[in-house]
Image (cartoon, rainbow, N blue to C red):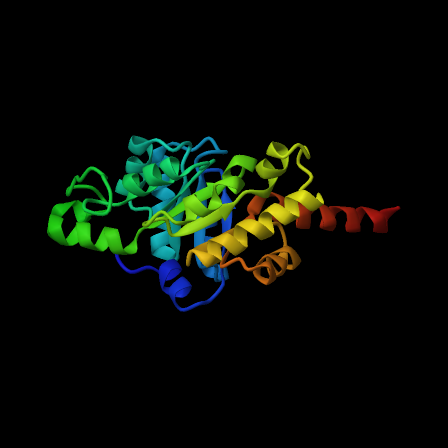
Amino acid sequence: MIGPHRLRERLLAGRPVVGPIINFDSPWLVDICGAAGFDFVLIDAEHGPMTPSDVESMVRAAEAAGISSVVRVPANVPHEILRYLDIGAVGVKVPKVESEAEALLVRNSVRYPPLGQRGLAAITRAAGYGLTTSAKEYVEIANRELLAFAMVESAKGVEEIDRIAAVPGIDVISIGPGDLSVSMGFGGDRSAAPVREAITHVIARTKAAGKWVSLPAIDAAGAQACVEQGANLVFINVSPFFFGVAKQLVDHVRSRQS
C-alpha cells in the first residue's frame, strides 16, 4: 500500500536526497542501497532489460529497506506508466518530455481525477489489494504522495522548460545531460559550455516555477557539484560508480606486481 515515503518527506523538509540508478534485476542490491543510507532507488526500465515483474521485486525490496522506489519508464505512454504505479512505485521518471502537452500527459497518467486521468484499479498491490483501505482513500493518498518526474534531455525541452515546469502535478524536472549534449550537437560532451549553460537555465526556470530538480552523477565529488548547482535530487549511476572503484582496485594491485 502506498503511503508517506522517505523521498517526498525529505524533499519537503528541504534536504538534498541521493539514490542509485539500477538498470538490472537485483533486489539484493536494492537492499544493500537501503542499508547504505540512500533515500531512494531509481529502477531503470528504459535502459535495462527488466520486466514489470522484475521491477515489482525491486519495489518490494525498497519498501523492506525503508527507501522509496522510482521507476524510469520506457516511454511517455499512459498504460506503461500505469503498470509501474500499480505495482507500488512511488514515482515515475518519464523520458524526453519536450512540450507542455507531453508534460500534461505525464501528469494525467500519474494523477487520478480531478487532478489527472489515471485509470483506477483498487485491487492492485499499490492499493493494498483492496483489503486495507477504500478506493476513495487510495485515490487521495496516491494523488498526494506520488511523484511525477519529467525528463528534460533535448534542446527542444530546454526551449519549452517554462511551459513544462508550469504544469500542475509535475513534481520534478529531471535533467539528462548526456542526451541533452547529443541533441545540442556535442555528441555526449556534457562539459561543453552551451550544454552547461542550458542546464543552468533549466535549473533556474524550474526553481522559479517552484519545482524540484534532479541531476545525475557518478561519484561523491560529482554529487556535491550537482547539489551546489541547485539539484534537490542526485542520481548515482551504479555501473560506473562500482565498476570505477573495482577498476581502481585492480589497477592498484597490478601496479604493485610490476
